[in-house]
Picture 1 (cartoon, one colour):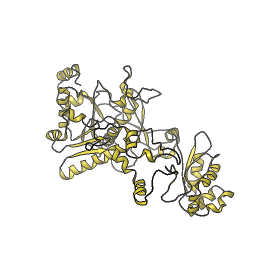
Picture 2: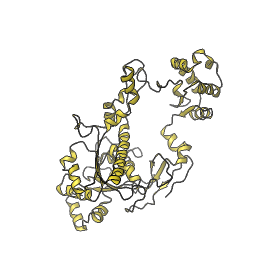
Picture 3: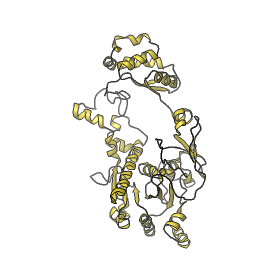
Picture 4: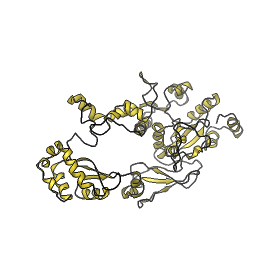
Length: 441
């Protein structure tokens, strides 16, 4: 189904309610992925492949369901991290449903010999294998790049972990906030004059996932060009380091230290000098607007937009360099003007004068009121047999050619066992029943 542009609060709906596997559409149609990934760093990467037509077959263990199935985040439900509620329906997991749309799902107990044999048979009919277990887990099961090459000579094997699969820390366990700390990101995040704060959210899970996606797409392209497979080893900590470029340069080239009274810089920008440049309180509870001014011409337009109050004529604000030196005073004055303004009103006013400004939007703003996101169909809905219509964030680009193929919400536990084991691998019904009774699938 093709999405249509809508009003704020309305969402395109994809899918017809059909659950049976079908021929996929999109630029990656015909690509089959044996997907051992579970958390965001891997699952978001393979979701991109699934969105664009790849047949991604997610491998789970029925006796130890994936962590995202245990973190529903659905209509107020709360469970302790890492703990499985015996009475909870694993098909209600909101995080899992977000990570696993457009994928197929099978269950294999990889702690059994027959389960590992079945997984190898699945790999043998695939051309890409992905995993993001802690280093050593796949090796414990005998799943190595050399073994997969015996099954599929031109296989692409993508491995995704916190520290990578080589070096003195390769066996360290990781998680998004740990990666952010180890990569140096947490140290440089926060407000001036206060201790670094970092993020509670697993931000780097998603950032590393996008690098994983890029590496996979490059390997797929290279195989089409040369016929050669690839082993990919993405380390999330290294992805975090790539986001530190300007700060690393400031330390190494300018001999600055990040341990100084005005560091971290918070919302202020040092290079180039910009002022006002920050987030300013507005009317209402926890409402803010971001404003950025880079030169004297923009400053003149800002002054005109806000009605030329007396303080804008202060000689300390006459040039960009002087405004930069007196940011505290400038921010206090601008905050006094924004304090009784609606953030969206300020945004529209300043934008109409050519000033970069944006309301600091909360989830409700994004989800229900933003006309730009509604116009572009950023959020869309798909039906789910257990939780009903579920909302997702889409691919952040419009394409004139073949775009995403949103055909089905996330698989139920073991939903595609018959199709994958029966049709793809040729396991007859009697053997499938036996494997289920033995706890292999």
